[in-house]
Each structure stands twice: as structure tokens, then as C-alpha cells.
Length: 142
Image 1: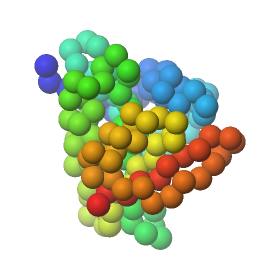
Image 2: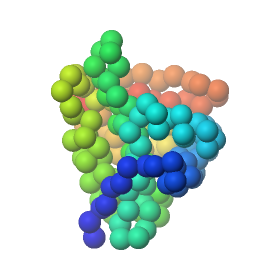
Image 3: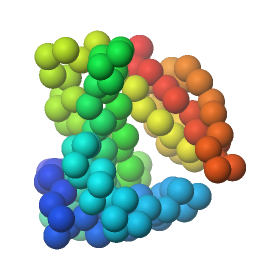
Image 4: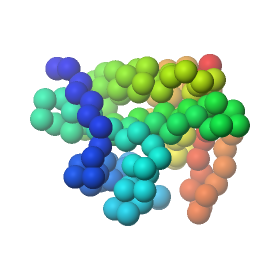
């Protein structure tokens, strides 16, 4: 089946939030947090048929360096079926707009599946940092 990607709206933001909080339980977001992110980031949901399989965030490029950030999350029951690769490619295509000098991503260090996925798709680790006792890995697309 084909992956269907839709932009998050205020009405669908709870679905996006539920996926984020399931995959990143160490950094849960409130409904207000998600509404605020909608004002500055592109948030999407991915479906296969009627099944919700994941979500993504595209942070626009920072003015100082022109680096956009793409984060794709796939629900555990839908991993290793090609959805993540298809979703990532679609989000990379969307993030590559005029003025973008590079692409990065961020993965929770404890998420070995996510780190392996990012590295398999050409991302290389550039930095590790800790926020509120959660270690994150910053990676750049080579």
C-alpha cells in the first residue's frame, strides 16, 4: 500500500502528540506544546490505508547555518516494512527548499532502532547532548 502523508491540523494534533509521546516518553509534549510547534514547524502524519503509521517534524532552516531538521517517527508495529524509508524520503524532498544548506536529525540515544535507521540512510553523528536527563544524538546527512 502507498503511504499517505497529511499535514497536521489543530484537529489532528492529538494523533501527532500521541505518537511523539509513545516514541519519546522521556520528553512528553502537552497539547499546548504541539499547538505551539504547529506555528513554527511542519508537522505531518503518515497513513497506510486507514492505519496511522507515524509522524514527522520538519524544522525550518536556522538563519545562521541554513540547516533544516527532519525527524521521522514510525510506530513500532509498522517498522521494518519500508514505511520509514518512504516517509523519510518524502520529508527530505519537502525540506530541501531554496536556501537550505543541509539536513540534520535528532534521535534519543536510547532509541537504537532510530539511530540505526538514521545511519543506514546516510546520517552521521555530529554531537550528543543531554536535556532533562535524556541523551540526544544530533546527526547530519552526509
